[in-house]
Image (cartoon, one colour):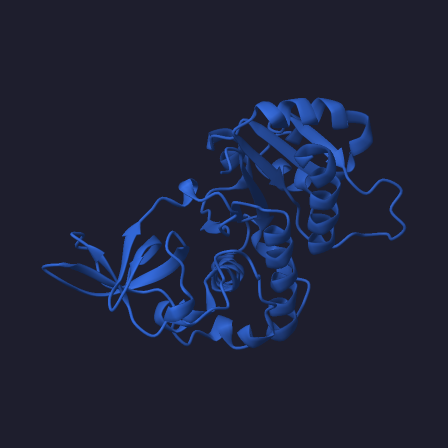
Length: 284
């Protein structure tokens, strides 16, 4: 069971440097895969340009990430034919524990966890699509139809019986949630309840110089946030739009790619590199 929750914050303009929706979709796919590989619990999409309406950009990134996170057998029930999903077919599969390949009732196991969506209800309870031929019933619970739920299989007979569970109870990594923030990054960093905030920047301290200190803080923190800048604007510039200094809001400003060989590092590249660097000393 995961006690520590790790979130990453991405700018709405993370795909703004690419003109075509197909390539934007591909980039978001890389980010979603990285988040799953390194067990990220939450992805926060924040507005990074106060002079522009970034609603469309935020919707695109959040919709694609949410679609990726949703098990394949539930997508048609939970997503309409939206323009943002035109190229969703090129998104790579996550292959996480909550994306099972089994679509057959006879291969279900008692105590297996599944994501489901509620289909109907009667006096006995609520029927839920859990990705096999027949729906399961959650007895004695009257849930709204069309609601996504996490369940545990309790009995397998002519009728599958299940019970709702809290995702925090599941011992395996169970995907990430996606949050769209209306507030600027500075307000998020000040108001959100994170015990450790790590900002990434090429102007930051090399990670190796503060690895021991970060590791100590990491092990004591219950909620950690890793923050990434935009393709055309670093975190200090984004925070500077609000007249604030990044060092007053983040616990650490680190460079996870010191002596980079390219003039710039794309956001999706920074995410993969940073999570890889943080993974070994902080999860061993």
